[in-house]
Length: 247
Image (cartoon, rainbow, N blue to C red; front, top):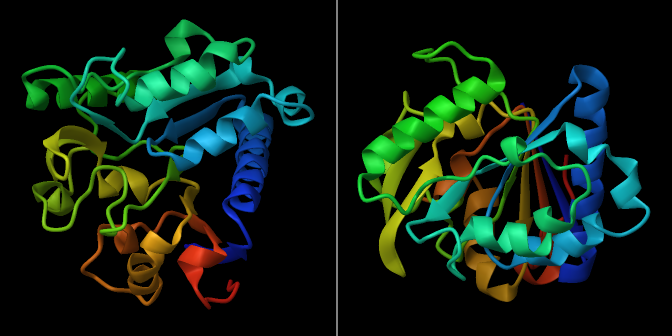
């Protein structure tokens, strides 16, 4: 495992670096395995990156027909809802991405009333997409899981004190979010930590305290427990507040 921090001056610079890292991960995965499997997240920071991936030269640098898209988490809202992570990615990114196959976009069905059944179905869908036998316990290895971090230190929909933090077998679970109070669906630590790369994009002074605690190794905050094979933190100066680039 490796963990690296890159501090950049502005959110725009973090977005540029994130876009470059997504392209690099995609190209490397396609060259090595013929497919790029990525899990997207919600929040506002990816919205700065999506237009960069749709513009030259990044757009033409990747054969997006060889990409498969999943989600790290989703709110319990319909897929057309303005708070849906899927809807946000579809509206400003996936719908304009050339070559993307409908069958390669794997939406989390978090709006279903039976969250447990929906999570099990999504786990089964992931297994099929990865060619993993049904019932296997070894988690899939994503090429990239693209994450953010909330001011409370949550990532994906793993919140401080929530039940999903203790999950060690299932890949996907429903989890209660304290604010705004609602059910969500999330990938769990076994999947996050099996990834070839976890990429954190963190911006804003409101994230400063949480980031300081996470980078210091606090066990109280969920984002601190994400340790993929490679974990890269791209953080703006306002959030890092004095932290230095480190390998």
